[in-house]
Image (cartoon, rainbow, N blue to C red; front, top):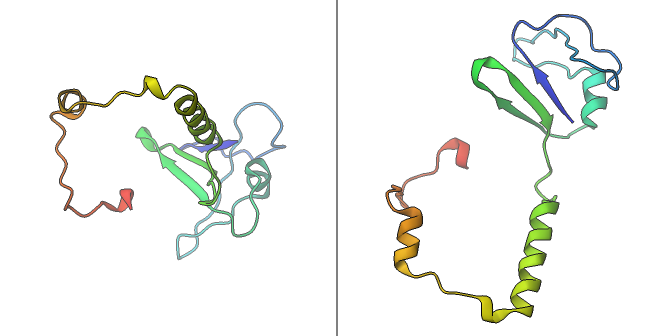
Length: 124
């Protein structure tokens, strides 16, 4: 489940997380820019102590808040895809084809990449 926070949202209190329609609540920031995550939001996102929250800032100032996946959690879709590839390659190795330099260039041509440049904070 994801929670959306919109600037200027209606300040009615959050109701039961299973109800319909958007709900919002106003929370104050401390001097250190901290706030308490309301209990209804913690329930909706299934948050526990020490869990991490992922924020996505959208154009227009809307912020999407969701429970962050722990780094040790594997992506189930990726895992299934990799299992499929493993089985496909095992059963049909004759279908493998080398990618020639021309095809590779057509896929990434014009993309500027500096392999020695430091990563931005977002890419770390």
